[in-house]
Amino acid sequence: SSTLIHKDFPVLFSEEQIHQRIAEIGKQIDADYAGKSVVLIGVLKGAAIFLSDLARAITVQCTFDFVAVSSYGKGQRTSGAVKLIKDLDQPIEGKHIIVVEDILDTGLTLNFLRSLFGQHRPASLRIAALLDKPSRRLEQIEADYVGFKIPNHFVIGYGMDYAERFRNVPDIRLMPPDYPELH
Ligand code: PRP
Ligand code: MN
Ligand code: MG
Image 1: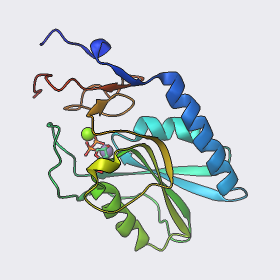
Image 2: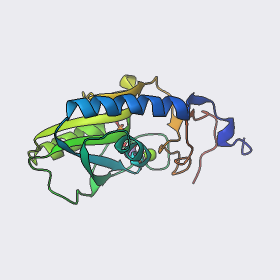
Image 3: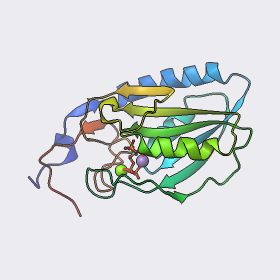
Image 4: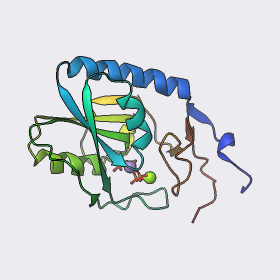
């Protein structure tokens, strides 16, 4: 009903669980890139919150860049086609890059970006995804750093939206399937 607000949505991961897991991933990245410098590439807009917390969980030298790709739109379904809307600001040739995503779902977005960035000859390319929905995969791709594997539920919060809303919800919650369509 229209009186349902996000505080009533069931919590999937609390702020504490998220920050705990990101601290672990940060330690892994510190170990893997010791003595190196990395470029964190966030995929707008969903990855913005995860990137900002992940960046502060690592101590190796890093810089930020951001790309934007065509979006799911307002509904809960993917359109299938991916195209670049905002390119990188800095060249990545010879750099160690980590593509940072909030969620790996069908794999279309990250597969597109992996092959695009691969053409720029980075020194290395890894993927960090806070959430992974393996059951939804249409293209074969795995993240190198995964926060949590989840079943096929539509989730919001911590950067993730429904019709551009709820990105600022600090934890990750399940979207009720009967929630009214937003415009
Ligand atoms: C979502 C999510 C990932 C992508 C994952 O972005 O943030 O970027 O979809 O789905 P895929 O694996 O099926 O490609 P969305 O297109 O909703 O844009 P947004 O980040 O601006 O919300
Ligand atoms: Mn996204
Ligand atoms: Mg979205």
